[in-house]
Length: 252
Image (cartoon, rainbow, N blue to C red; front, side, top):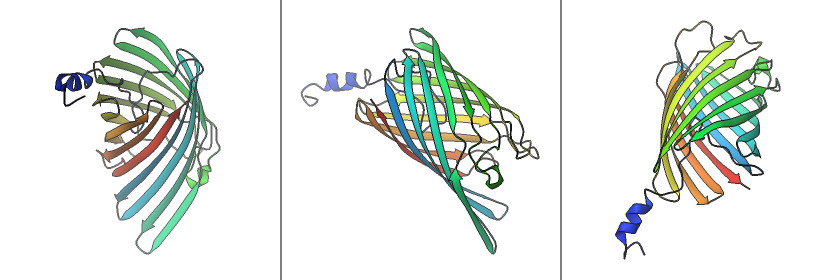
């Protein structure tokens, strides 16, 4: 069909499945699942960082369950696990275990033509071992303001976040974050995306902000099942140098 009707094939690129941010990007979009729909996300990240003769390799895995409570309201629950290996001259160490479990909601409170606005709030429980660096040691609270603008195969997203980082690790408690993303649908199966962002540094001894540049691909195996791949590069010395990301999501 595409060989007989090249114009139809070209037009399909402009009316593809709507793009959406989210994993493998750090920037979220304002979309919700709709009442009664659910989604399972399994994600993994491998980070490599080297500074002052110390190399740190981390592997983070997360399982998240998202459910559409109403047409415009999602509830979600996420369980992370982290393994971190640190190597210095003549020594090495390794820690691993479950991190802080997260529960929250996302409310899309405004939709007008191409523009959607949402608020996303989350709290964590102190399930991770703070003495090993696997958790904050106390419950934290976060809220994000999200704006999404869709036009044809393009989507643009803006996230502005605040986190009350209550903790037992002598970290900063008042943290801010901002990121922007662009997503492009190539056809009915493929999306390409990129984002850039920065956040407050949890380390009280450093005034530099972690900043990153990310890029990714999303492949729709079916309309309800997708595979996602991405990379993230640290733009400042206090951000992880390189992170590889992979995940899958299943909607039902």
